[in-house]
Amino acid sequence: MTERFQPSREGGDTLRELIDGPAEEPRRSTAPGGEGGDGAAFLYLGIHRGGRAVLDRDGTRVPLAPGDLVVSDTPSPAFVRRGGDCRMVFFRVPSPHLGVPAADLRRVTGLPVRGSSGMGALVSAFLSALAAEPGLRRTPSGGLLARNAVDLVALLLRELLDARAAAGPVPGAELLARVHAFIEENLTDPGLSPESIALAHHISVRYLHKLFRGDGTTVGRWVRRRRLDACRLELGRPSHRRPTVAAVAHRWGFASPSHFSRVFRDAYGMSPSAWQTLASAGHGTPAADPGVAHR
Image (cartoon, rainbow, N blue to C red; front, side, top):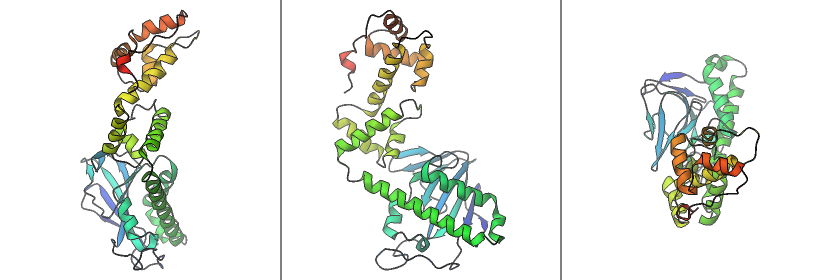
């Protein structure tokens, strides 16, 4: 494995080469026209190490967390907006070594990959370990580590391409059902937003809003209503130790107790505490305001 550090144009960035030049026999690309096709000679995989960074692509702004990955064709991608404290390390891999057609590489350029789960977590951890131990290149295992790293990057790219292919042709109704299920599974996440929902389904925020408009509602209204329903059920559940209204609101993603009380009253015609008292006395469930229906 031949690798080196060299300063990039961004003060907080470093560049590391997994494979430099023709050190190893590259895999043959399946692209028409042979190795490399008409694409860039290198793929750059960036790891966010710390500081402020936001990926801005197709109108979607996604904050990057430490460990998140970015696929790029340059070590200084314009679609990553960085603060002065941002630190990233970019790994450069000759594209032919990945065995991925040039057209497919262009399809995943600019995509963020969460480094907290799945293949993204595995690749992020492995490459971060290599970046932290530059002396590994001089060990007998150096070449094997480089090949393993390239294999992992290739698998990650294939996973990204498969996810995009699966999301692309899905009819609107089926995709909307998937989005609804995702929202249900993540209602307690205070970071649930149109941006995070769109990112998880490999669609633009604009298209996500279009899906919900076709269903007669908005993303924010749907999420708020599902959270309100969950809070209503929890507040009305019989228990010897009743949870506080603020605790229930926080658990289901409402950052402000006063905002929660206001939207709860708008939806159900009474305050959360009044509903909790009424439900605990066995008086049933209040009806929702017909003007704040699911649609």
